[in-house]
Length: 298
Length: 298
Image: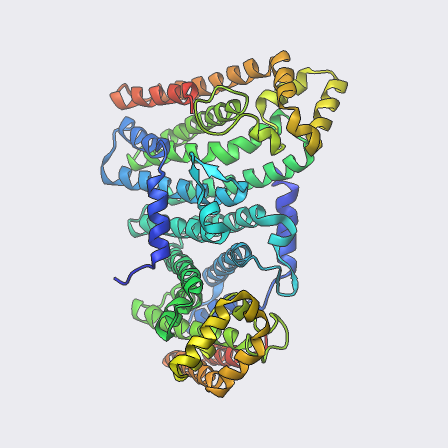
């Protein structure tokens, strides 16, 4: 086999070195075991999900113009946008080929649908961010697509790899969707404090991203308070200095408690569905993981 | 069905409005007919290839930091990189779902392999461009991957959609690969003049991309001439003013004739394979299209 080129090898090494918590492949493997499966098919599903997730992270570096991700410089900053786009496409194609070579068409369908929803969700977020026009319904539609869809695909692929029936696969997909909502609300809460590491406070706000804590606070405020906050966020100059004021506004109107309660509800909904599976260590570990997602500090 | 969001609709309209020559889907449909097929499967293969090609063009807008494509502003310039990346991913996922919903796993395999090769080829080109270290072997490896692979997939998918045997599909893939080389050499020759419309003269050179006309001329020049030209290209300041000198250098060493002869050889190799098919109007139209690709002015 001919060499693939020095650049491709270097980018691959770089991405491997900064690998994350691997929550998604873990979800696939536990779901497979909890549905009485495991083995090679489950491992392939886990590898496929991680390849796909890494591809979207790499593309996300372009999308967010993020300077950092997981503490290290993003591929984008080091090698520029063009390499990030191409490397993401490369990972995607390798995942597709892995699945096609083994006839895993069920995984492919679940994951392609997740990719469609992830791109739709991110595009909707960009549109709404520009207009600062976002309510709870729109927020949930965005996070269900951009985050829920792939976590849903993880649990569904795990179940499918175990040969579970269509009804069980659909139930596990629902569980994953709820778990994904909890995961994203947890992430959005970090922007208002409580993260040990990771992104600095108020970053979403500087990007004009309205998330659940602020949306809930805005929905409880008076129309004039609401207008003031939106106008502050609209102004780049005022926005930069206003983070502490906006945090106080969110706290005053109970936005953090509201978001925490919503997150716990989504996680509990996921756990309730997972509990429908026959008792097993894997099932319990899956429920523990759902609780970790809510309790995590990064 | 819920709305997909205003931004996604607007980007879709924009991309549809600037559609190109549609050479790739035409190749799929003609190959299908020439192999005794046609109908819905051929149309799906053609749609899949065009979706994929459009996705890579949209991603290419990020890759090339191109300000223009086909005379119109690129998505990149109008909506920025992040929308281009997400819209490319969206098109890709829609193509995958179209194929998976119809069980077209053979098309998917051919096309996923093309995506892998396209991203590998572009990454290799970036690596080599940075170093200005490129000979004919490397040039052909790059263009076979970045351009040949998708044209090969067009003819192979067309044949596969007609239910052709594995041997015929493989032969048509070879024909497409050669046709793709001819197509790319034609494109690279435009940079040295001869295009009616499209990219301005010397753009590849300003991007430090060494293509066949210049590579051939460099291989025929003396070591010191060679070093002079490379040093000129390496210097941004000298490069900008040196386009006429480099064009003369390429002409003097017969680089244009060399590239034209190579292009005609590749097109002839493609036509010879296509002629192995049973006589039909579609087969002859396919050969005409191969000749058009060489003769085209844009």
